[in-house]
Picture 1 (tube, rainbow, N blue to C red):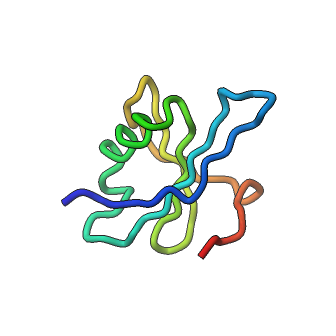
Picture 2: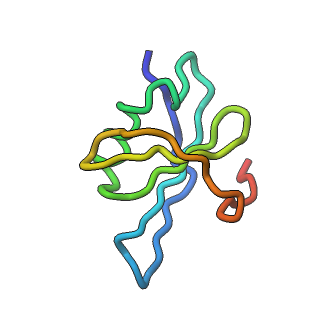
Length: 88
């Protein structure tokens, strides 16, 4: 089963447009974003090429889906200094 997600927000630094970030939220289905990272990365990057992907898991923590050349390469703990207040 494929994980589902919603885009929470998309941001970029106007002085460095290439540094875009897509924030997504796990919709708490049978398969999590973490367990389906390869297809999530491919899907998000098809809409937002080269953007960083930050996801909020079902437990409320945020992590980054790392990628290179459009392929998922691993996870990285997302710095609390960069976290935004919960949207919902």
